[in-house]
Every structure is written in structure tokens, then in C-alpha cells.
Image (cartoon, rainbow, N blue to C red):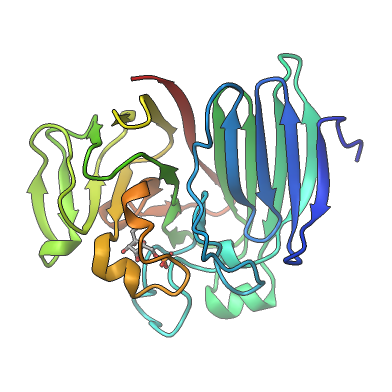
Length: 291
Ligand code: TA6
């Protein structure tokens, strides 16, 4: 594999190897653990993704922040609650299949994960997963899952993206008005979104049938982050607020005002059933502009 001049594999002091990418448009960091995009900073901008200062960086545990890959289930496993939340994709080592420089100066990375005896014991479906990350003035993250089995694969998937914001109490999230969401803070009641989303407490919502771009309007950092999508019908919006963040050992007690999750997903009513031999592709396309 000819690594482009602008990407290199680094082994951090905490022991997890990652790809360090630097091109004229942006810098990025992608851990092989979970194919986890942890950083993306477009040239001239501050960091767009949020990472907890308390995150773990050890195999077998998820990294707190960036873009965790939730697959093949979202949240707790309904049949086997003892299994890791959000599936196993984010806590398994992925393989770097290709690194390339694109003609426009962007960088493209492909990472892969194949089913094996371990994954089949957790989820009885053979699959090939591929994450393609294009780092440029936008960040395009595409998860492709191919059903390698002989029967349909029911599954869920999410790009659980954490964004750096100035203050959760000052932002507005636009683009979901009129949509129906499952409100996890109200016993999963289904509610229609009126206008932009603002935040005054723990917020955990799954917007169904949402295929449009969402915009985070941040007056504190003076920027708008647009989260566009392909192949995704669900959008999850989450902030743990005070009590839940204090209960998470890998989340600093005072970090909650500085982050929001806008997750590009196919979950709940929008879960997937991938036919034998078929491939499902879901992508988030991130961009940043002035307020
Ligand atoms: O996406 C929101 C959510 O499902 C919340 O309910 C919360 O559990 C969050 O994901 C984080 O999950 P994690 O397993 O990464 O702590």
C-alpha cells in the first residue's frame, strides 16, 4: 500500500495506533480501534469533533467522542443486555485497506472489518464492513455493510458523532422541525418537533424518517456546522447534561456544556434489513461555515 505523503500511521503513547492526516484542507486523526475518527479540523477552523479528556484509549472499550461506529445494534442489545451497548464495531480493531491523496488535495482512507467467529457468537450474521473517510474542506464518512450470509441481516447502524460547541444552552439545531422523534426522556413517547431544537436539560431523541441536513447554529463559537447525510433515515440528538455525564467515568463532570451529538443513523423504526449479498451505505458529510 503506497501511503500518501500526507498520512502516516502513528502509535500514540497510550498504545492505540492511529492515522494522522494533514493536507492543505484539513487535519484529522483516525484510530484503527473501531475505525474511530477522533479529530477533524478544517484549515482556518478550530476542532469540529469533540473528545472527552476522560476518554479511554484501550482495546475492548469505546473511545468517548469523535465518531463512534454503532453496529450491528444501537443502544442496549434487546435480546442480550449483557453485551456492549451500540454493538461491537466501535470496540474491534479495523484494518487500513487503502490510503490515497485525491486530485483536489483531499485524503481518502478505507478501513475494513470482517465477521469472524467472535462476531458470529455475538451476532449470527456474516458481514463485511468498510468505512471510507474523505478528509478535505468537508468530512465525508461512509459506512458500507455487505451481507455475506445467505439470509437477510436485520441490523441497526449509527455514526454517533460528537461535535464541539461553545455552550449547549446557547445553540440551536435546525432542520428537524415537523419530524417525529422518540423521546427517551419521556418513556419513548413519540413527539412532533416544533421549530428548532434548543437545550435546557438531558436530551436524548431519535428522529425518524429524517433524511435532510441538520445545522448546529453556534453563536458562541460563531459558526454553523452542517450535518448532511446519504442513506440514513434516522437522526439522534443527545446531550447527557449534569447527572448523566457525572455518572459516566469516561466523561468529565464539567464537559457537558461543550458538546452535542448529532448522529447519522438507521435505528428503531428505521432499522435495516440487508438482503443476502446486498450492501447498505450510510454517510455523514460535515461542513463548517460562519454563523
Ligand atoms: O445516542 C444517544 C445514546 O444512545 C444515549 O442514550 C447514551 O447512551 C449515548 O448514546 C452514549 O452511549 P455510550 O454507550 O457511548 O455511553
